[in-house]
Image (cartoon, rainbow, N blue to C red; front, side, top):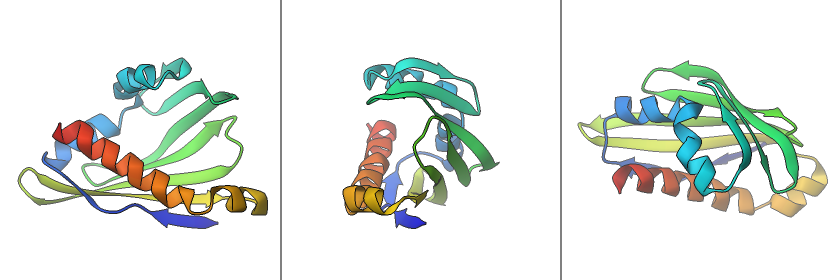
Length: 135
């Protein structure tokens, strides 16, 4: 199991506001359309889509701790098992820190192909979330 942690990003919002958005996949519909994910469908706890040659890929929220943690796993036709944790910590009013942790069960070939790109990808996701809230 490979484990990667993003850098900690600062978001100028209350942890409660960030949590409300990130803990419901239905809120991601505008972003999914912008990212041109095909066949996007979403409920509060799940989403399904086609992307980069993968049909019926999906994500599912498996656990929530209000205003603190959202735990997500792959669902549908994801080619490997993974878990993603989004952690929020409000350090002052309108100053919430966020970190993303990815744990993925990758075979040797996938580890070689993805290697250092996982850290870059997780950092990019954290930055994009922070920019969306701070913008």
